[in-house]
Image: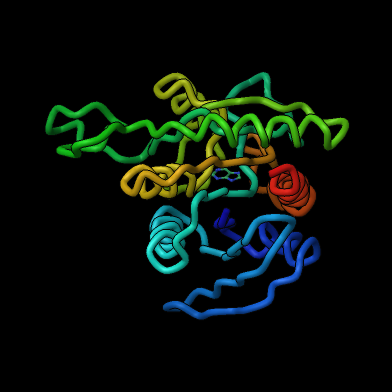
Length: 231
Ligand code: ADE
């Protein structure tokens, strides 16, 4: 079993380098990939960079170069579900882009025009359960299965997040998950996104994000690590 772990930012992958040893490093393009072993699994870890293009490129490399059997995306997100609090964990049910918009051509916002596939990509059921179990074991944590929506924007406005909630029935918003999910779908590779809520995507989001980024990212990394140990 070979697992590709992707995070967008240094804070989102830093904890893994404490949790297991990376044995070999590769530079592909401008990104570094570390390979190692953890429990019975081989792991490949990378910091993709922020946004859907970076995430898609990393997912494609995980598949084409490292031949991973599973992609786990780990990190932080803004809450779109009003019932979610900072520190809550979200395991993706599906991922969708919220900023793709060919509505002038008659395609509903959030749907990929002229694409022979879905616009919502389902996460792997078995790994969702493993991650959920791991999250519940991690201690005093609220764990949700929820819809993750992604766009190339940091959402920091009450009306904007409400629109995303109403239009897409989103539970959380971030900037990478749907890109990874689509690449994974295109290659029949299972994936799950696991995010800890760092902010509520409202006017206070920039400060809350800065305040909670490290701890929220650590929580996600801890749960992903516990899940891998269960395999
Ligand atoms: N990741 C964490 N918080 C976010 C937000 N408010 N918008 C987009 N991505 C995020």
